Image (cartoon, rainbow, N blue to C red; front, side, top):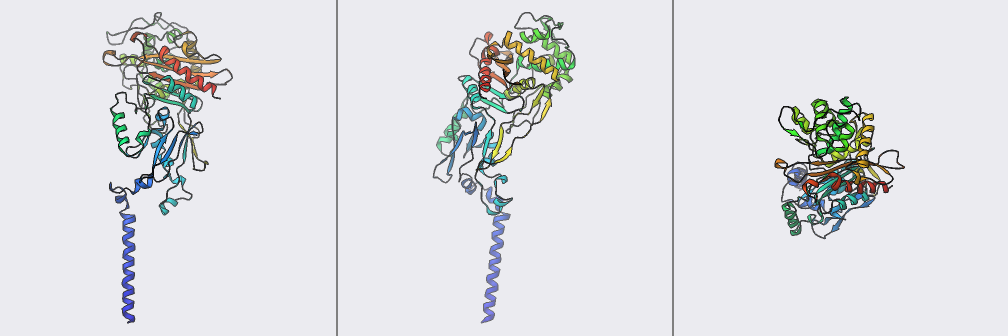
Length: 486
């Protein structure tokens, strides 16, 4: 009898070992396959089983979570969704995440290991921490001024703090409300189809994901290259520039929209925005130095993230003389995001130094303690400090005595550069209106804000479209908002 009991006990022990080995096989060896199986809804139920952390602007959340009492329990909500959509993106149960919702998903969803109370704790317990918060660098007043300025138009605005690289405003128009995309029902599917079918592409973030020919605003870069290389030593010395200018090696003749460009000095050419002068200067500087200067400002950098990726702004590296001339006035294959052109203006304002832009000030745990902070940003010297001083003077003259007068702010120093960029087959498209600028309050030791504005569909006759008329007032409103906010 005892022998039979012993055999039964051994058999039960073997069954228990087999059961444990099978459980380990299922939970460890085969777990990735089960997790990735489309029929397994447990990861989704787990992911949406708790509220998502928030994205904060000016200390206040612009996102939230709604309890639906369904299997996928919590849906994302947005406060003033269209205003902040170019920053937050969307978090959808059907279509995934974009922009900050994607770049900071680990923090917001609670899956980042840094949120666990102990190392590897969540891996061991299969638990998930509460989502943390993401504190942005945005200035609410500047963001609203940019959004209201672009109301009814296509375009984008980017604003930076020159000394740090903090992004103060990032607006794209037309925008959209991310809220209808949050769920998994028919409403989300309808909203997705409608937004993707919209010819105005409201989900395209024009501030960081769309590149445009920068037109005459690129003359800031060309002027910096000419001054740094010694091609121009005196701002008031005639440049020996013909009008019209025949592009090297071709019969094509480049003309100007303004009179007085023949042999104009750099100071006069910058204020009048003379294409002929800057095209000739670009050729005299040469492709290597022009390319090096453009790269120092941030062009052709494929790795820029804020923290979501930014489209690469381009300045051609293999150019003949005619192509170099056109590229030097912001045409041909030169293309830039509004954020890149804000970096150009910020470099002038910051003594020639370019700070890498960033959008996240810090991330925090659910209780509010800091998880990670932005820290100091990488610095590049785009031009000599003395060149930046002279460019600031030139940009101030554009605002005080030239085409950028609509950006002037009483009691502040403002510098700017207007631009119109041709595009389309045979330059038949409505020119893009550009304005880049910086502003310094009367009590500020240094400029506090740099802005770039592009308007795609300016409401004016083709011949009347100008960065000074269409884009400068928007830049002024943004700069004024920043100067008033502190």
